[in-house]
Length: 417
Image (cartoon, rainbow, N blue to C red):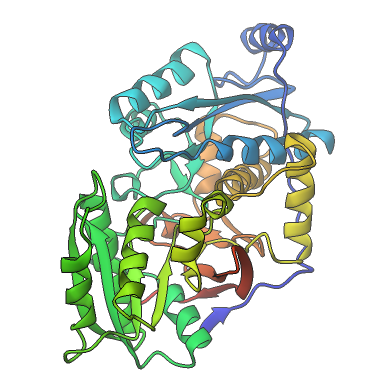
């Protein structure tokens, strides 16, 4: 049973924004050195923020649009007057190129050279600057997809720690939502991941989650090479098709990232005659629909975003889409990365509000202790609990006819284990 369900009509007030001119930056530095709050990146009228995303990578993965999401939220907040009289001076986002060393360099530059108060958003699966930011007591907000970030004093995932350590509670929402869509959680499930450590951890957690929700786990494999998809998927697919007493499972869950892996896997499954449900957390991406092969491979797949989908008509999503169009252009194609940047910025703004006018990093981090916030756009978050556990919220989108349709609204469930 869900712990609660968020619906539209919730009212909240938050604020902040953007200022990029060099003259403004110079004025901010002068103010800080002559009677400002005394905290890095803060003046009486501004707070300086920048992000780190994976804009480019060797495998083609990009989360660059998270920058636009944050910018859109900050711009609206600035237009509303800022938080406690301060607007957000948003410097944009650095590219970590999906390498740990570049992430460290980017974090050092933002803190040491650009003098930022916080790093928002962070959307980079191989981000290497987490330890440095924690050592420097610099708060950062983003999509916490790496277990190494969980529990750090200055790291804030807008939907919590998504890969909790063993012994921590794990999410049940994905299995619960899929079970509700399929008519029950009494079926069998196979979980497939690649051979990276983070993918293996995620697959183990998701397997435990589906089992705890009532599904029978008939297979867990992390044998697929992450560096490049296999030329021949048949050996992997054969194991799946014989996993449930010699037959196929009712559900296949993919923890693999990228259309090249998932597209090849799903195509091979369908060629082998698989008729059950397929689900993953990454296929909610309009860009993949531009490729006819991807459209065919993903037809019928249930994508599981940890956000209320853009296809929703609740007021918070209508507002987000309006903000994004204003910041990025009216013909914008919305993406999940835009939403992760937007909601990371939103949580940061809400915490600024709680901190009060006396803004220092010390006061900000103190305000984070016991901070909680609910929003139908992403669910709920509470610290310090969600530094080590996920928030337990998610939705379902079904891919159909080359597009997306809302299958189940975002809902929050109790974590299990």
